[in-house]
Length: 302
Image (cartoon, rainbow, N blue to C red; front, side, top):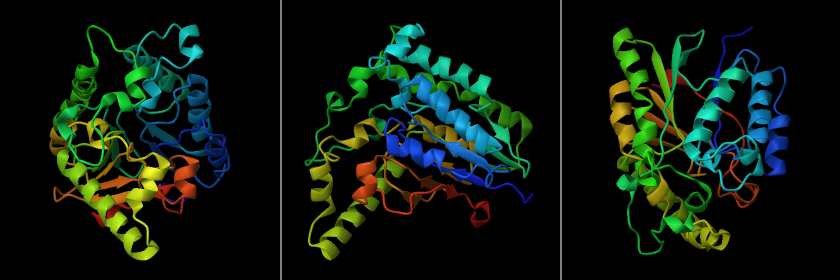
């Protein structure tokens, strides 16, 4: 076998039949020596999550995963009630145990080629929020507001702090080991205001391209699809993650959540990569441009 490769894809949303078919059509032989990173938003339905993770385990040597916001929805699935999963915190830890059983990694590991891969858990707070006159900054415009259930110990406004704190033992272990290997980190959520601004700048560049080459602004295209009504920066992520990234100092950070394919350089020595599958309408309208495929991570570029 050849040396194993590392791939990434986020926001699989297998509740859409076309997306599950896309996963089922991944070769059962091609990637058996390889690693895949899945940065969240597979599904809120635990049986579908289990099915999807098992599929990836059949097709890849190692599977790394962290939950996104959709996985923590508890107000929309009878299955959660049947399993006595009462809130989003309980669901996160249920998923963690599920991954242990399946053999999917939600903890750091090292590939045979010496690459350390580190999942970073998080939620969002207002630290990345950038008001804009064309979009509304209101949490009630987002499904999480209705479908997640928090606790007295971890209310919604403390969720980012809670999940980021779960990463502290990982960082401590890295310090003790004085890790000199190449490092890839990944999270579902965006990690800093700089990354949020770079994302916005890239989206503006794309809107300008659409205006110039299609006689239609990309913002109009997105408004027609319902993608721009709410201010994404309000729910994008947390600056708390950046504090941890700067301690870890990975070569590459994979993120999801935004449903927009891009590779970004924000001047901190880390390459930021987002490679979503997203929703069918986003692919059909090229809001997520082709090719829609696994992203092969090339560490030699760093």
